Image (tube, rainbow, N blue to C red; front, side, top):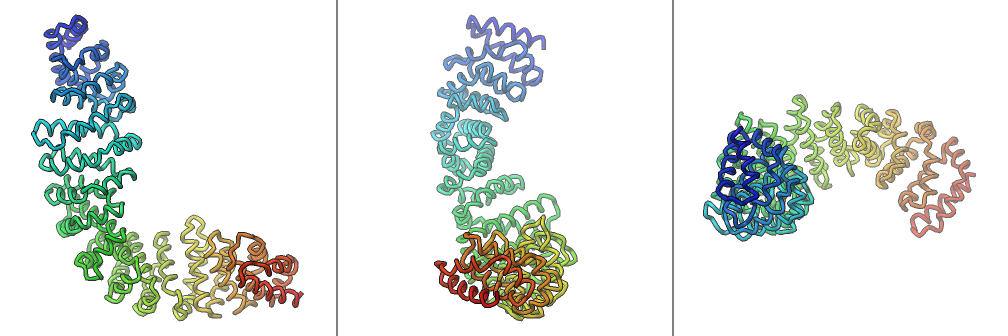
Length: 607
C-alpha cells in the first residue's frame, strides 16, 4: 500500500502539470492496487482526496482517459464509493465521454456509469440530470446490427448500464420505455441470440421493464413472443430456462401477448417441460414443473388464447391438460383443475366438457383430497365445478353425477378459500333446481354450517356466499320443510341482515326468501322476524330514495305477507308505513306504483 500512497501523491502533482507519462504510470499503479484489494485501495483513494482530480483527467483527447474511466469503474464496485464519485463531480465529464468514437473509452465509461448507478439513488439522479441514458440508448440502437465480438461486449456493458440505472425505479423505467428502448432490445435479442452475455443482459432488462404496465403495449408491438420462444427452444440449462420464464410470466399477463405466445408455440415448449420434469425429484425439476404449469394456466386466462387452445374441445393441448387431473403429482393436478376452470368460461365450452365426462375426473380428484387435504387442489377443483355448473343444461347432469354429495364432504373444512368455493358451487348447482334445493335445504348439518358461516366476520366472501346460499335454498325449493329447517337452524336473522347489504342483488335475494318464509310458515318465523327488527329494516328500505324499484316492490310484498302476525302488524302500524306507501303510488316504475296501491289498500283495510 506504500506504493499506492506514493502513486497517489505523484498523481496529485502530475495531474496539475499534465505530465502524461508520469500520470499513466500512476494510473497503472492504481489499477494494480485495485485488482489486488479493491476495498482497501478505494478507501485510500477516497481518503487522499484523489477523486476530485479525475474530472480534469477525463479529456476526450487524452490517452489516459480509458484508464481513468476504468479506475472509476473499479472504485464504484464498492458501495461506499458511489456517493463520493457523484460528489466529486465525475458524472458530467463521464456522460460527455459517451459522445466519443473510441470503443475503449465508451466501454470503460459505460462500466463506470453503470457501477455508479448500481443501487445508488444519487448516482441515478446525476446520470438522469446529465442526460446519460438517452445517449446510451442511442448508441445501443445504432450499434444493434453489428455482430463483431468487441461491439457485442460494448452492447452488453451499455445494456447493463441502463439496467443499473433503472432497476426498481418506476419513473426511470418509464423514461427508458418512452425513449423506445424496448423495440431496440427485442431486435438485439434476435440478432445476437448466439451471445450468452448479451442475451442474459437483454433478459434481465425485459424482466425489469415487463413489470411496468405501460411496457406491455410496446412489447406487444414487437416480435418478443417469437424471440423468447425461439430462445427457449435452444436452452438446455435450467438457469437459462428460468431466466426466460421470469420474463414470460409478467408479459403473459397481457392478453395480446398471451395470444402471440400461443401462436409462437410456447404451449408446446411448456408441455415438453412438464413431460420432462413430472417424475423428476431434483429441486430444479420441481421448480420448472411448477413454473411451466403455472404459465400454462396463465395463458388460458386470455379469452382468445384460451379459445384457440380449446379448439372446440378437440385441441391436443386441451386433451393433454386434461390428462394432468388424474396425475399423481399435486402440482399437475392443481394446474389441470385450474386449466379446466379457465376453459369453462363460456357456456359452449362448459356444455361440451360436461358431456365428455370431465366432471367425473374432477370428482375423483376431490375424493382423493378429502383425506390428503391439499387446499389449493380442493380450491381449484371446486372452482372448475362451479364454472361448469353455470349453464342451466349442466345443472341436472352434474347433480345426477353426484357433485353435491362430493362437495358436501368438504363442509368441515376450516379453510376460507375452500369454504367460499364450496358455497359458490352449491349455489350454482341448485339455481332453478327445485328438487336439489329441497334435498339440500332439509339437510340440517348443511344449514347449521351455513348459519355458522353467516357470522364469519373475518371472511366477507364466505359470509356473503353463506347468506346467498341460505336464501337460494328457500327461493328455489319454495318448500315449507326447507323454511322450517332454516328457522330451526337460526337462519332467519341472517336473512334480515342480508336485506341491508350494500349489494342490491343480495338485498333482493334476501327479501324474496323472507317473503317465502312469511308466506309458508309465518307462525314459526314470527319470533325471529320480530327479534331481527324486520319491520324497521323494511321501513328504511322503503324510505330510502336510493333503493332500487325491485327492492321497493319486494319490501311491500313482504309487508303484506307479515300482516297476518299480530306483533309484526303492530310494528307496521306504529311506524306509519301508510305515508311512505301512498307516496310510492306516484313512482315512475309501474310495477312499484301498482304494488303501492295494493299495499295501501291492505294497510287501510287492516288498520
